[in-house]
Image (cartoon, rainbow, N blue to C red):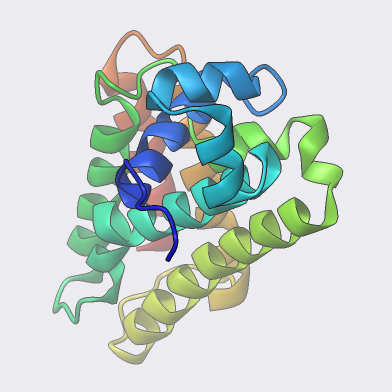
Amino acid sequence: MGRHKEFDQEKAVDQALELFWEKGYESTSIQDLCDHLGIHRGSLYDTFGDKHELFLACLDRFSQRADENYNYILKEDSDSPHEQLERFFSKVIDVSMNNAARGRGCLMTNTTLGPVANVPNVARRLEAHAMNTESLFFSFLMRAQNKGCLKSKHSPRELARFLSGIKQGLHVMARNAADRSVMEDFCKVAVSAVF
């Protein structure tokens, strides 16, 4: 009979995600993780394999959170895609400037800028996250186009890539934005370029 786990694995992934997000993959040691999670090295290795495997689980959880936090807004059917995009970006700003996350930006963006981004199983997750974001915008824009709401001369694919860049830029800006209005102005121009 196997030994009973003395901790909640889902909670441990959430806690590890917060630590990786705060310190970055390279600066987070196994001992940091053990201390932060309140578990022994043996339990960490037995449950997650190693630091890298735990980090992969954190990246997966972070992608899942994006759907829960704001992606759902663009999946809704709306008579006003313009207002829908404004609500989406407002929610991205809310999440990015949340006190708990302030100064950390986006885990995916931060990871993209670090050396671990070159590790194949990390690179695949980063690429999948970026493609999911682009696909989300593309589907949203196709619905808006079918309603005759798009004013841009650019294709929905081009606009989806543009809006993906805007979203990523918001996460970067949140790291040092002293005033929410700076980010809101950024979004206002982006929305006006589309609708």
